[in-house]
Image 1 (cartoon, one colour):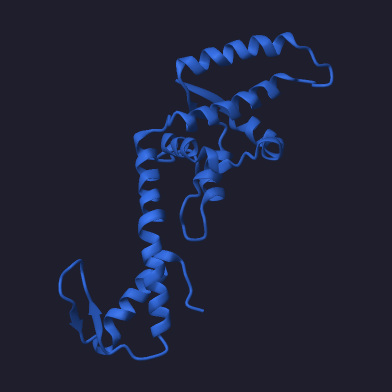
Image 2: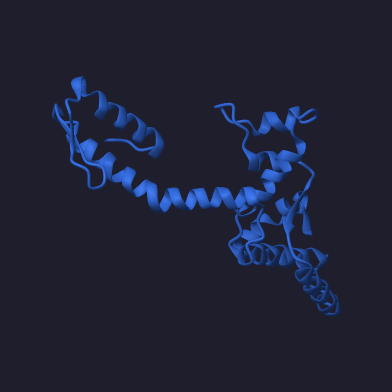
Length: 200
């Protein structure tokens, strides 16, 4: 079950949602990805693809989704749907003349509630969960070690590294000649690319 919110309304309300709720399009990255998947293999989207393709030739998922006339489909439960229905009956009983077309404000509140509910109850697809788990492992466990090694390699770039000593676990260290600095150069280039870092 999903709460469907038209992208045309999302774009129209973005400034208010951002200002009042701190909303950002990145909060709908999974829903945008699903829109992209639904349009693949892009038989009728040449114009949209042109607008959403980066200089590197990659498709910007967010730009692509925002150029469509689709709806973002936020996963919800039957319990949440019932709460939305109850909320609507309360909301519609209150007439506020100053809020012309007030139904859109109700929808905006429901959108933000659905995002909050989705995140609180982890209502993501298995693919999204895998991506988030991989990102968590990388950002908390792998990247800090990569940064430590990169900093050490940057320190040593001012001098010649003729020998490298590597110790894995409790094993005895292995000494490498590092002829023409092959290992330190390889490590440096790999880390610089992965981290998007600069030695300057």
